[in-house]
Image (tube, rainbow over all chains, first blue to last red; front, side, top):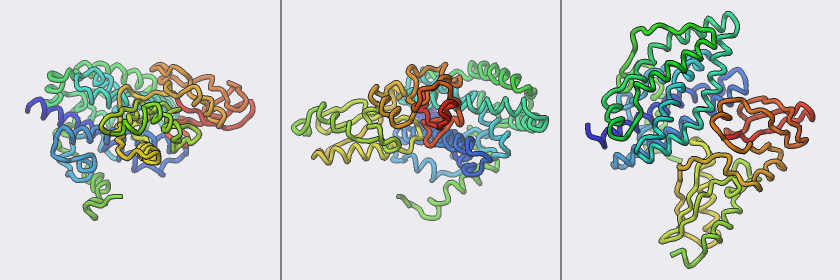
Length: 252
Length: 163
């Protein structure tokens, strides 16, 4: 893989992560038990969809074959998406959703900060925009995570189970593959080894404040970054792409 | 060549009449999102998006084109400029006054990382100026606002969040 191919793959993957998580959160619109969280979730989802659009537009320009944000979102199959497995997992209950966001955004914020120092100008610009948004999300979601962990016996027990269950999906976020390595070497990209250390420190502090127990490093699931997904992604994109598949080329 | 038709200052003054679609009391120049106007072969208006997913972005771009068409300029290109990223510090002093009069507490100056990580304190009620206020919801009618309540005059109000 050459330098240009790695840049394209790296940017498209950032778009996939933002889109798939955004779409998962869209599923919860009008399903929250209270208005405040309803608004928070919808606004957070909107930020992710907006970030996906910026990454996809840039990926399309890099590729140069005329594909744009809609083609990336609506005209690709499961194995072409390179999002983390963590992000395609079903929403579960409120504690599951909050735990997923806390784990991912603790990582994503560190990644975006590092991306603002890379040598690709456009990635720097998008990362600088997104970083401000994710900082706000993380504050909100961390407060909820702590409140649930340090809440009632039942909320404590349930969010501990969420953490235990989702922990297995955190490994691939933090493990560099060929694309990460080339992007780091050629574009002064993030060092996932450093990010992993910072992520562990920050998550350990949040988990401790929530009076929860951090799971042991068990077997880690992986494959999302290479296009090998869990069964859940297919259902998600089937719903997301329904309109374009039923009415190809439809627009408004 | 549009250079014959209008000067940069003239174009900026036309743009200062274009309202923001979600907070129409503000114009797009009050909001600070018009970054520059470049006049050459075609007229380029550089606009900074507020939030990545702001649904008003396309509407604003179309409003810019429509406003300049109304003044006889047909070749308009709206360019999205991401860097430097827009912050609420770019809202003009006049814009802040307009927000307050409209009943929206303007964002505090000096958007910093520290402020983003901690709950804001001392947001003044736009009606009675009391700082004895409390946050009701981190989100309001749009992504850029939070909902507050004044504990003195008891009125609910919106706060334009600092980013």
